[in-house]
Length: 72
Image: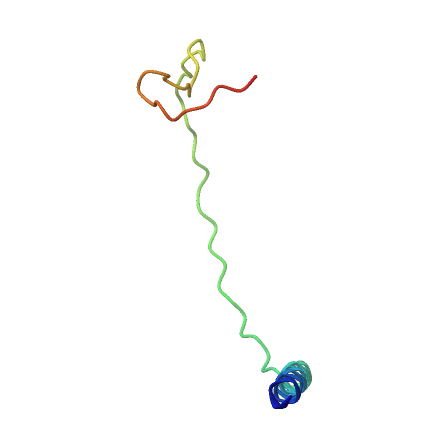
């Protein structure tokens, strides 16, 4: 009997404490943010070729992985 009352009281206190913590965090005044320095970097050009995707990137080796399942 006492454990049911205790768990209900503990739950209520946790909810009340959480509500008070969130409420105090919402209403506190925050200092104004300092202006940040913005740096612009030069553009980068990437030159290269792509390999054709003729081979599958990932495949399941049945012999290498005995625990692998085949989807049907």
